Length: 381
Image 1 (spheres, one colour):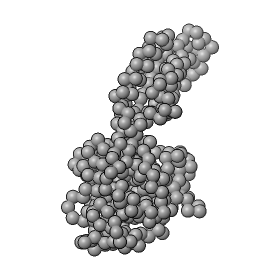
Image 2 (tube, helix red, strand yellow):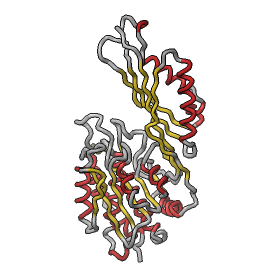
Image 3 (cartoon, rainbow, N blue to C red):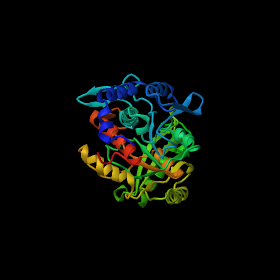
Image 4 (cartoon, rainbow, N blue to C red):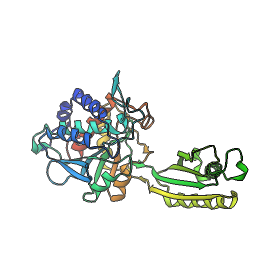
């Protein structure tokens, strides 16, 4: 026997949820330095009496795993507790105004994590025999290389995962792929007043980037690929012509675009650059790549959402997730990921990062509906 959905929704505490979110944002937890927030969450979850296990990723870095119900769960709620580094170490903390919470990680993804924790606390109020079989996984390292999720997947590959990345509460059963390309040009340093005697590495890099931009595959109006020059830096010492320039490029691939196809096209442009740009000395590294995916919308999770969303007056529109996330890792390992959480990518990683308390509360309710619905109950009350 599993309790009706409305009973669990009544156990969700909006004030506790807001407090959890604000306290989580106030704990600075950039990738690699997640221990403080994991200690906070561990204590928070331990109050339910359900065991919380540490899964070591490396020294002083660990995932948190908790399981309720009987047997190994086929559904996990998954959130990453790390953030990017603060844009201003004095201004990253939480500020709430008119139901909107601003602060580092508010959208990506402490809002989603707080909603999952609140959903967990609400479900934990049920007698043991009425709890769904469900796992909660709070991972480290997503903003860097996904080492927390990769560690978890070494031991466990659930059938389903719900990942609370910011989607403005629009479910994403399809996901963009991602590639990271590093370019380095070498030049010859001379005094800045005599550029004709040297070779400017920045000028070489700009010519390479212009060739890449003209690649038909990179036409952003066609929507196959999102191309972004993330970083560019050069040797800055002295009043000289720079002899080195580095650029990092992010490529977000539409769900069915194969990274191998993109890599081959980029390699063709690089060969063209080497033959057409005078004196070019160029190194290229394909530092990371992960394919996207597109799942069939005829599945049990969609049915649960079709029941829950009208009750919450939420629009049910299915969208692809345009950024990289641990969803790529889970899909490649054999899980079926649903990306769904409060907040939006538009403000994530910026000084204006924010999410609304209404969306965070709605997320907690949707997560409980998915947990109960997946367990075979809670669809009709």
